[in-house]
Length: 172
Ligand code: ADP
Image (spheres, rainbow, N blue to C red):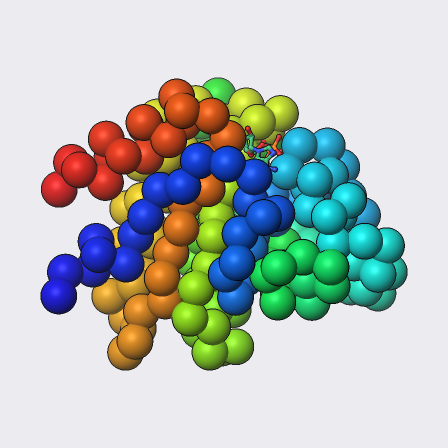
């Protein structure tokens, strides 16, 4: 079995996915925002915000887990992607850390499936092709260290983004 069999690309709204956990591209406050973060909070309901308040924020590159409340997903993994400042401020490392730390929670909770949005690819302004390469490379590398790798879904808003992921997955 090759590891790539555990990676799929789905186009659509991450809040609709029936997976053990969806990943939220949150901000450091963990108190909600626009984009995918807003969509997740709206779909999960106010209990999610209440739990997030108790966490007290999350540094860039790290990840925290909460329940999914009204989402089909049982869990939400909140990670904070880097804002793109031109690439000289550790953005690549921080973005890779988001995927690594999210998968560390998947492992510690024994989850069997997880869906990632394109972290930092919205208002945080990361160049899309670079971000997609980091996402795919980092997830592939991390899955090697699982005894039973989880199913990983890259959930894309729009066909253009989905194509970038499919091309990247086909590259190797
Ligand atoms: P960031 O602040 O990390 O850039 P954004 O939420 O602005 O996060 O965007 C991250 C990515 O998530 C973008 O590619 C955006 O198109 C996508 N996105 C926005 N809403 C959803 C959603 N409901 N499901 C999946 N992806 C989404």
